Amino acid sequence: MIYVGKSFTARLRGSRMCPVVCEKCQTSFVYELIRQGVGRGSAPYYIGQASAAARAEAGARKMLEKRLNREREPVACPGCNWVNADLIVGYRKTRYRNLATGGIAIALGLGFVAFVSVLLSGHRYENNTMPAILSAATVAIVIGGGCVGLQWLLRSRINFNKSFPNQPKLPAGTPKGYTEQELTSVRQITQSGRFVPADAEANAYPGWIVFRAGHLALPRVCCECLAPATTAIPSGSADQLNRFAVPLCGECDSRIKASKRWIYLQACIAVTIVTGMTYFAVPGKADDRVAATVVAAIFSAIAAWIIASRLGRPFKLRRVDAARGVSRLQFRSEQYNEMVRQATAAHEAAPFQPPTPVLPMN
Image (cartoon, rainbow, N blue to C red; front, side):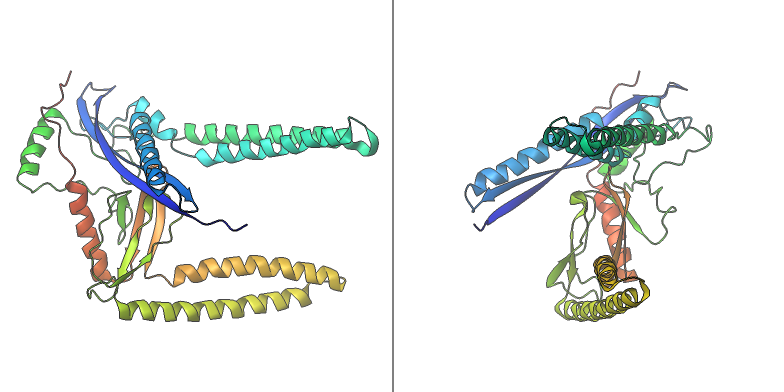
């Protein structure tokens, strides 16, 4: 039986103004929380494509609403540089999520294996079956509890008020807090088209473009020679929030593909050398050497493919904060890199509109 179908992915970006009252100096300010939601839907055998697209959009809207209601940004008070405790707690919840999830998944997997083993063994004690099952259950509890405890410990160490009253070192992509007076002036600047957002993260990654999910703006010219773009290549990001298409002209696209083929050829040669050295270096019988060679070939091939894929791209993409959708990007062409930086800054500034009327500051 052959399965075919079509998958749909929807991305929705939204924002809301969050009012805050500083715990230290009682200064009232607001900041703009920006998030993006992703939803997916599939149409098996291309049946029900419209409903699949609607499910993807509904899932993206639900995820967006959930993130806007639950998540927080560690915004410092514009009056005294203090970061409220609830903002720190809200930011902590976005960190190290995979640690507890992975630990619990491993624990549940081991517990399921132990449960199945009990059923298959018929509660007999032959061949030390039950002690082994109890050991597996103990290991599952230790791993699950240890991962949850480690997540709590790492989150509790996050404290942006260590340098108070000095300016705190905030994560890249953190928005700025505005007081009532600043909002009035910002509204005037925004209406005149001269508003420029704060670029506090620029010094942290010199030469890189730091952007939040949904804020990256790529000019439709070739990222290598700045000629009119005729095609595009995927960014290859594992993060669904930060996937984008990189524009290229036909000539540069052909050159990059040829360069990739040459890099892959070199990677294959390197894998062959590593595999041959492993076969002759491992002592023991021929079967042991073959098994070690197969393992070395698999891992070296995976490593070579990852390295070759990264070297063949005309840009570098790194995650800064996956939970908040913050990444940094750098193109090989300095001219295009600067064009993207300016376009992204303009795109970042465009959606910012201070609330009208100004939120009451108590």
